[in-house]
Length: 153
Image (cartoon, rainbow, N blue to C red; front, side):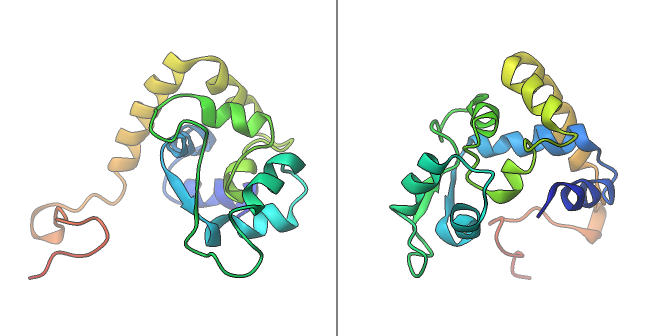
């Protein structure tokens, strides 16, 4: 997804560019499957060539869809390395790198890269904001036992 599409997707939910960037910072944790980033590492030019080559070692053009790569060098730490990676053109996902590619969100990426406390504060604020989108109450919703599927009735 390119930056205008990402911004529109968030705006459609009542969120703004700051929410987009700070919530994307959650990608400082975890891993991505090859199938989700293959087009970025083989087709895009907004990625550090050495980094793309490194990712290609574990993600061939064909096959290996379930192979994984960390979203940042510290996949178990909630830190600002994600933003630093974007500034170095080392975003694993195309949609992540779109946040720092000469567009209107570059300044926000830089801000969070430089200020961990600001990142934490704004992340908490945006998580609350996101949590209130289309909130289901009473019998209209459920707390899932497993986030990947609806609870059995």
